[in-house]
Structures are given as C-alpha cells and as structure tokens.
Length: 400
Image (cartoon, rainbow, N blue to C red; front, side, top):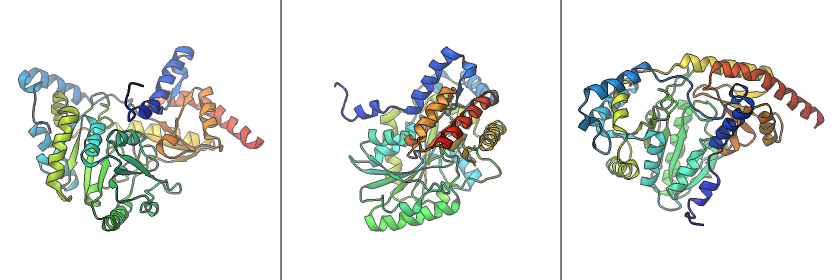
C-alpha cells in the first residue's frame, strides 16, 4: 500500500452519500433520469439569486484585476470581514469586529481549520447523533478521535444526559449542527443552556476549556415561525462556522466564514491560530466570491419552495404510514425504517428507484434521510414508488 495508514480507512469508507449519488446517475442511464427519485444529496435545486450574478458581473467589470484576483490577507478582504461582522451584529445584537471574522473555503474548510488548531494526536471531538457524517473524516484527518453521544430518539434534541460519560481529559471540542442535518430539528435555547451548564461542569472536572463549533449552513432555512437560537448567546466558547452553500444555492463556489466569539477563553490565541491554519489549509478564500458575498448578505433563500416540498413529502409519507420527524429547519426528512432490517428497507427502495441515505453513517441506524431540496415535480413523480414501497413493507410486517 502506497497511501498512508491514516488515509487508508478514510478512502475505504468514503462518503456513502456520494456513492449513492453516483449510483443514481448510473441508474438514470438505464431507466431514464425522470424515473429515478434521488433524495441522496443536499444539493439545492433553487437557483442562486439574481443578485449573485449581478455582483459577479459588476465586480469583473469594475474592479482592478490586480485587486480582484490577487492575494489579500489570509483572513480575507478587510471590507468583507467587516460587512459580515456588521450583518451579524445587526441581526443578533452581537459585538463582532471585522477581525473576528475569517473568510473560509466553505464550512468544511472552517471546521478543518478549527480541528487542526485545537487537536493533538488522539485528542477527542464530541458529536451528538445523528450528525453530519463527514465530521468523522474531518476529525480523523486532524489526528483526532470522534466520540459520539447517542441520539435521544424521543425528541432528537441534544442528549445532554449522556454527554458527561463521553467527555474525558482528551476532549477539546464539541460540534453542534443547528438546524440539524439529517433530522431538520432545531436545538432550542433551553437545550443549549443545558449544554453550556453540562460543559461548565465537565470543564471543572477535566481542568481545561471545551470549545464548541456551531456548524450553521442551514441557519436561514427555518419553517413554521420557529426561531433559531443564536449560539453565542448560550455557549461561551463558541466558534460559528457558516457557509453560503445552502442559503444562496452556491455549494460549488465554496465560500463561508468562521466567527470567533470575543467572549471565549484565550480569544486572542484562538484568533491568531485560525489565521495560520486557514493559510496552511487554503491560503485564503476565493477573492471574487468574497466580494460577491459582501453584496449579497441581505439576500434570502427561496424558503417557500423548500417549505412546499417539505409539506408535500411529509404529508404523503405519513399518510402512507411511514414514521417521519417533521423538519423544523434545513431540507431533510428523517424517516424511521418500518422494518427492523433497515438495510433491506433501503434496498427495497432502490428497487423502486428511490434513493434514500442510510442514517447509520450519521450515527443513527434504523433511519433514512431524504433530501427534499429537489424539484417539486420529482417529489410528485416519486409518490407511486413510495406507495409500492409502503405496500411491500406492510407485506413484510404481516409475514413477520
């Protein structure tokens, strides 16, 4: 073997979601794209706002090319960072300064910057099931170990009662994804206050601070009048990681930021360190997209489209007898397998050309995730297939 021992298991266990996506493309060549119901990938189906295109054109036409395409500070353009800080302060009553913002190559880059800054070999990161599966790979690449708090399958809020047993002297970081991928649950302010209290007790026990990564790519995707708590109002040592991939439908552009809370312990040390890990990891975020984001901070996602998809899919599946968690945010539907053999449920879905993501990769076996950031037409076309799948599951249940 020529690749490193560290990389070998990551290559072997490469993303199941991406594999399923590729499987769907291959199936489409056989049965036709219109006959494949691909709920695998969180790839927004809504086009980016026109303001994005207008900003790209304006910047290309008006900016000095040496400025537009040249190096800048590793943390990003000063005016962009200040604009992001001002936007956060206006919306949430926070007190960020421009220098507290580090522009990154999407949320993944921001998370990796933080992990590489904090982790020594075999240090630990805590995630709450169900969690975005790439957290495991990100942590491994930084030399750390991901420790998983089991899911509270009654509420799917953070299972704080099980947290203390997972935290050890090697725990450095906790990752919280709010709204949650894959469940669509919003962690309430009360839950986050309980989390802070639990972390404070653990910090006293282990003798050092624990920092929280607040992974927020779905911040703007919230339904039914729900309000997403602003994490630094509840968690002291908070690092917000944000991406514009979902809110502005720009997953391929890879642009986001880290916001370092001025309230956190060792604030100056953390901020200086992130500048270095950002430089080592990606030098700087893409220059053109930084300037585009500055123009588009007030743009909103087409929430009504996702909301319509959410209601349509949830109503249909629950009417067919599937047990589903009604999403409060993001654009995923979390469905419990109606039979004990959840892998068989997924395979039966494939026979009907329905591609559902196995949630065991999210630390929650027995469930599947459906990404409803797809066209409404595809959802409607998939209904007969779901009807057939529901009938098959009933037949299996009757035989059991």
